[in-house]
Image 1 (cartoon, helix red, strand yellow):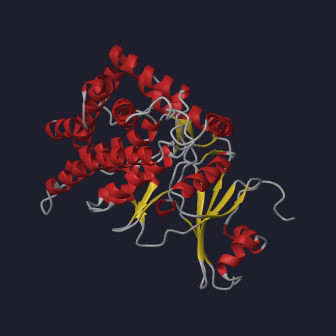
Image 2 (cartoon, helix red, strand yellow):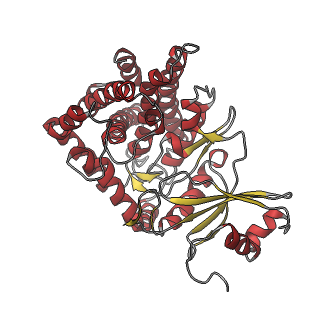
Image 3 (tube, one colour):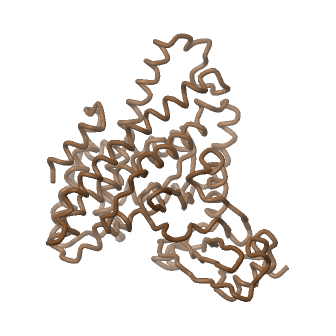
Length: 418
């Protein structure tokens, strides 16, 4: 067999690989003469190839054993491809409308073949930078989060099934450790990988490192991230992990997936919408002040949480007499009690989401990996102004998340802070 051991593929060897792999060759109608293969990986970690022929298409994603954007000096397990494939299949099972289908997985080659999300699909982050409104975004992403998180939790599964799944995903420890480092540790200390818009934000970055209350708050969240196996989380659910058109929303790249706190996914998405909001002034120009668009972002943020909450609770009600073992029907045996339990659960999840969202915002401003929403603002002093507003808001949110009762309060504070 030509591919019995791992090697990174290029266009030429990928073609050979496809010809030797029936699951992929059949998707192209076994026609290879007119194939177009191009490498499009603009992420931090992997090689991504789009393969298009006259009879079909797919995407090939190959994990390599180091961080692509840094180089071989930062090694990284290629086993992440296995967890990504398992997560895509699991999340796709619960939410097939919003997760691309997996056609082929090769553990030896750390390679996944999956549905090509053809144009006009683009990365949501790029759409937000361009000021494009997506009327179904809140509806779709809330559906994805509600179904994927509820269906992999003890609200749906027995503790036996849950423990088995948790044990399997414990193998993705290296990706979790990367998150522990870049989200929960590096921004709060001097680290060689940190950077920010200097000199404008020098004092702000230092203030993060000197803020005792912030450090107490991030410790709580880190401990939850490391210890709380609540559901199968995507683990990196920012606006760069979602592809969209006006009527389609697809969640990709769950290579950081593990059993963790639900709020980590919900917060990642909300926090990235807030980052987009704060970046908009840097993208405004004479023709478009982006005011209307900023309002759309806030509306979408609010809708995303409210719809998520509704959908999650309605799945819970639908399955309250099922095999989930978190709240046994024999105990939680009347509507009043069930509603009390649900209200407490959702309130805690709301506070978790706000905390994790704030942590994700902070790390994107003073940590190692930043976001294009802000980085693409060419005027450094204008960029720093946007970043400072986002950072101040995020620091407040992280420390005071418990005092908010509903998303509307958070959104009106964002509106005021800009």
